[in-house]
Figure 1 (cartoon, helix red, strand yellow):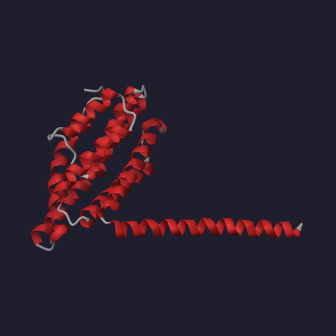
Figure 2: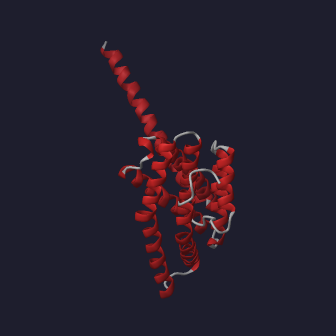
Figure 3: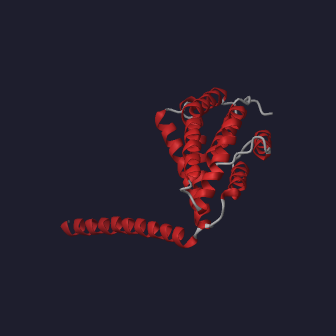
Amino acid sequence: MSNNADYEGIGKLILYGGIAVGVVVALYYGITQLIMGGGQAFLNAYHDALQVYVDKMDRYGKEDNGVLNQAKQASKDYEEKALGGLAGNAASAFNAVWNWLGTFVLEGIIAIFAYKLLSPVVKAKWTGIVNNPATQPKSPKAECIMIDCALVDELAAEGYTVEATNLLASLQSSWATIDAPYMQDQVVSLQSQINAGILTGVELDMATYLVEAYTFELAMMPTVLALPLVPL
């Protein structure tokens, strides 16, 4: 009896040890890929993280009648900033200026629309919006807001009208209290660093691009958030 217990204990030890080793190996592999793989590894990580973000927001839209509580809003904000960091790391790893980021954001959002099972009318509406130079997102943060708005329309198209209305109200509130102030602060901070001449190379390119992108999006996004739920 005791022998069986001993063997059971050893078996659990091997199992848990194997899990621990597996986690370490996975972490090592991931870090190695990011170090050795350069920009492409960061881009792959960005696309994976973006899909996780979309799935989470899709779930949030159907929970609690579509209302984003404080914890969900904090999670949403954290992941948006993390996506921006991954995009920035990709730019640095490629040793490229940030004038490619607008195209990268655009391709990412259209790929998500193609992947998600959006109704044809909703997909057509938002593909048209992100392809329009007047409303085209240029930063990862604006990309996420566009995706959220598309999910609002999809909820409405599927009959979740209460959830869609509440989620849109949450997005409008978070824009006014979190997103827009963040962009404004970034514009002021980055512009002051540019004017002071303390940035060079990729950092200067990044700062210049984000100042232009956020300035554009601060003027553009209120119009997008005011679009009716009914597909255009």
